[in-house]
Image (cartoon, rainbow, N blue to C red; front, side, top):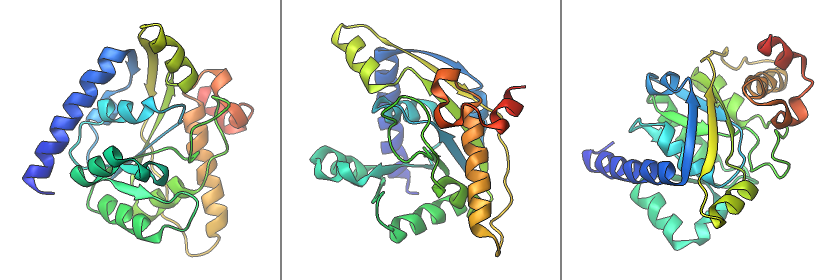
Length: 227
């Protein structure tokens, strides 16, 4: 990464962090687990609203943050400019975007940190959707450390209502304990991806209030983690 790109990213991160603190009061627990992280890391979290993107920049202060943007934002000139300026990656979520996937893997293997929502999209129910295998695949290919994060208060509905009344959001972020996963085996890959996708989602669910756990509310692994 060039020195100029680092400078641009730090300027943008400063502005995004300042804006996040202006718009929201944030209660954070375990944040040092992100701030002290080193090497290859995949940070997995639930996805409630558009504010999550701003929150990511307030949480992760590493210059080697890997930022992936959904393809639907490519139609906006500002998003295209930002992606080019800050070296972000557009991802075609509903196609086999092999090129972007390979680039994400390459950046992870160089020791970067990726923030990803295994659900793949914002939850319309404001509770966890079934996880998709992308996060487990990336971790299984790179041996990255996984850091689970549970977020509440960034729902689009709540954000719209509060900001329209000139009231700050109240966001709570809980960062769980980092954990490791084995590399993807040559055999039984589908079984591996299902098992560790469930593990990742259970780790996130255990950090959330009951009403946010969605399809994982009664998962036995969630009960085990909470206990």
